[in-house]
Length: 347
Image (cartoon, rainbow, N blue to C red; front, side, top):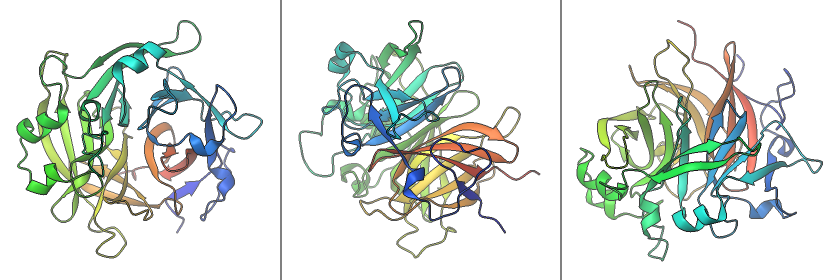
């Protein structure tokens, strides 16, 4: 029986499929378009969403100071430069980068109407530090303008800025969940609140995935919520969980939270998602991809990612018969990876 996860090179090579272990050449680097730099310095690629209109991947980084403006960036995952790297370009102007100071963006999604939402981790830093700042507890909504040929962020605003701007505080006090003490006192990668996944339902609700804390079982926590205008607080639709207890691994490895997520269902199908799950702590255990259908809780295992590949950004690019074309971004080394995985089986 063939593996449900099949890797291809950074630029899709027709029907050519590579088997694991994946060669390093299939993990293509991403570098800023401005200047020649070491690919090692453009890392912290934490989320990605595909724009089917622009045919570009829109990514977010959880680091601002090294490359201002690249907190939100874009690149073409199917085009490589002569050096074998993709060219990323910034989507924030200098003035917007200074105004919003987006220090810790962890996840992004694009709604069918073209609006983008991006969330920070809503976490405390891994140790008490100046990074425990206001911008870690917020999210933004924005649109892109490509009239000049090069896309830029057009309209951007803080989520619920006039009513409940501190989304971490809203999550703790008003989201309808009873939190354990360590859930909100614990720091990132030590069991405390830590958001790393974001996608949406077919009718435009946001779906927020938590690296931590975990639910019972163990299971990965997911929050469905409605996000309105700036003067309207978020509204919880429901809490849900992804049963990851049946995945391969020892007991410790089964403590997996959401590291990235994307909606994969097509029109007329129940909402389904491809989700990267992995350890809640700082260990670099192999991450896995699963498919999840919330309507009945079904979880389908799609296998490991390559060893050492921290694929925290995931987005659906295309559907080809019974296969899904997925793009992943590596948070640790700044690599892109295009791959096929088996779609949800036909009924």
